[in-house]
Image 1 (tube, helix red, strand yellow):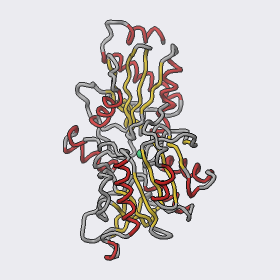
Image 2: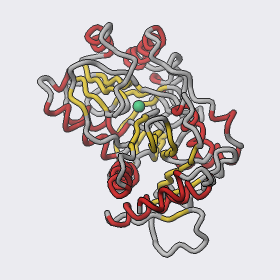
Image 3: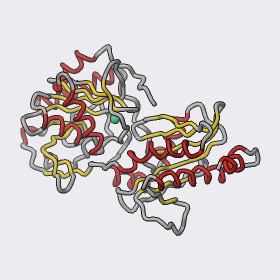
Image 4: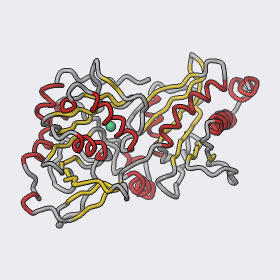
Length: 370
Ligand SMILES: [Zn+2]
């Protein structure tokens, strides 16, 4: 096996393509031995059935893989001759352009062979080749399996029955607007990723249909309205302007177990936008803890907090459950700060002002990645 690596990757004559091929075939082997066969998008006649696709691309001409359904998970991969200094932004761009759920930038740097994972949440971590092919691909597969097998809960059911007196919001939705301004003040709102500049209109529509993504932005905020409902920021909007009800901030009224969809009450006079993908997580927290009055999710970190073990993607039931478990175990679930591995923080509080007064000055913009 090592001889093959020598041939394919280490020899100076190796071309790009066979390096990528070597990577993909090693990954396929490791995934299969773990019970998760994957389909190679380059294979015209795949011998396996699987919801996991690996899409190897030429970084100069990223080819997008169009899924039949959202249940298909696409891991994009590219081999780079030399690792750029900004692997995160290069990988993130390739992920968007190839319409992948996660992107693997494989190549060699000064220390040897390495693959960098880039996730939608701007997660970014590496797996190094330390001399043994099986160990390397095993470690890569172990990183991929939880991502590829978790389930997104991002369907929205809109009912245009929001009482007219709430069309302009209330004091709770107003607290969300103020929280957005405060996040902007704290410089905790990275620019929305410019998908429109990178993708064709068809590809944008495809992404939107699959993930409810209008633009990749980071973080979300919610505030309880009453025992059963809460306001939450919309998906992919400018968080420094969370005011228009039904479009920038939405009223979540429930979760339809059977359809696995978030239920929303919206004004009948406007076209609604989707709620943030993390609505399922906030929904679980409000339901379980009547004392939680607000939830804030930011891409930042704090010292001395408990953190999830696996970096499940945003909007999956698995991430929601893991966060809910940690909040339950916190000293005070109503005032908990939970780390989301390679991703950020979910913070519960009595209300948003209480959250900010507790965490301001302690938020670290650099998230540890491992
Ligand atoms: Zn996030």
